[in-house]
Image (tube, rainbow, N blue to C red; front, side, top):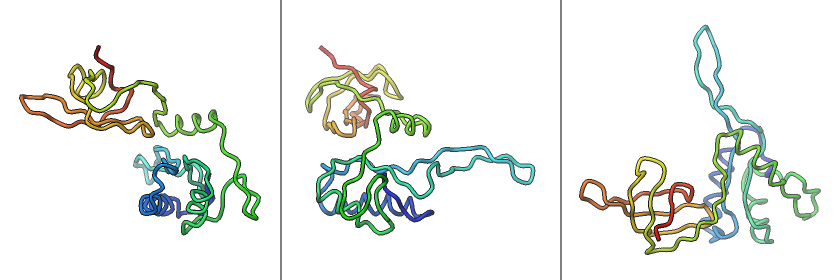
Length: 172
């Protein structure tokens, strides 16, 4: 968990994502999340939904803690340090999987990790979402993000769909 200046969480998120991309660190810095949730608020007699930051001043980062990845995250503009790091170049303590799961569930994010074994060229059946019950060929697989691209035949045309591993099943 990165500690940031309050109010700069989304800016830190976009800065870190672009730095990871430009420095070729996508294999080490996977996901950057600002913990937010939608709450109903009544103001002047009118109810509206507002997105509220769950942990002001903090950004969650899923990463492999190498010296270079740590350096890139630590030196991102707006970052003041890591939670669990005591300064002097010490590496932070990672959050426990249960803590991450609780935070992600609170945000409404699905964190199911699937061990499905698919590769480019495989035929899969879509079991959930708008393309349910269609079959298609896998064109791209991203095991880190648990996503893949599948070309499905819809209305006589081939359509590319980006799906999660939990939305497909392998075809024998």
